[in-house]
Image (tube, rainbow, N blue to C red):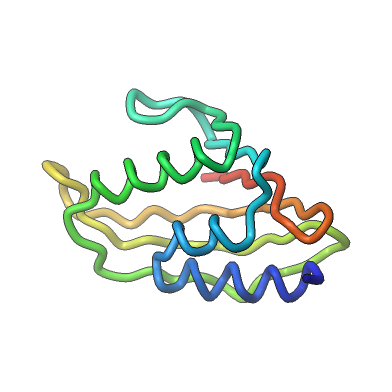
Length: 119
């Protein structure tokens, strides 16, 4: 798959909140995920598709309700994809909040090899 096609498929998955589907189809086995900073729930860096899938399940289990997800059209430059994403969510035992972030992905050999989030 070309990077532009990966970008469009990824944005489509994200708009539906289907992290699991995106990761299973589009990510390399050795992909890494980088958060803006470590938290009690998540480390700064997660390596390997299996660990990333577990991270996604953990996040989904922390969410009480998703009120909306807004994903911009992706930008592609070479093997890099970027888009903004804002999630309107209520986390368990937390007030409702909107979490805007810039999502940047690197593609190699037709698969996403890294994702990094900036807030």
